[in-house]
Image: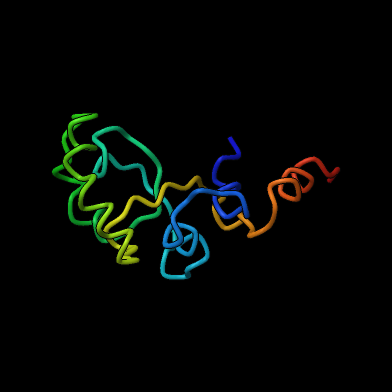
Length: 110
C-alpha cells in the first residue's frame, strides 16, 4: 500500500524517467491499464496507454514479454510516453529522500 511512496526514495531501483514522471505536471492522473503487460495495473496515463489500452488483450505474461524490448529502449531514451509508469493515486506524495525518512513521515501522528 505504500509502494508508490518508495519509488522516489534514494534507495529506489525505479528508472530515472519513472521517478521524474511522478513530479512532472504533464502527468495529471492514473488509470488502470493492461496495455503494458496484459494484466491490470495502475499507472500514470501516457501516450502508450492512450494508443493501446483499447486493444490490449488480457494476455499476461505474453503481452509483458512482447512489450519488454520497447519498454527497455524507451527507458534508455528517457521517453516517458512509452514506458510503464506504475503509480498509485497518491503518487504526488512520493518524495526524493531516504526510505527511513519516508517511513518516519508515515508514522508521525496527525
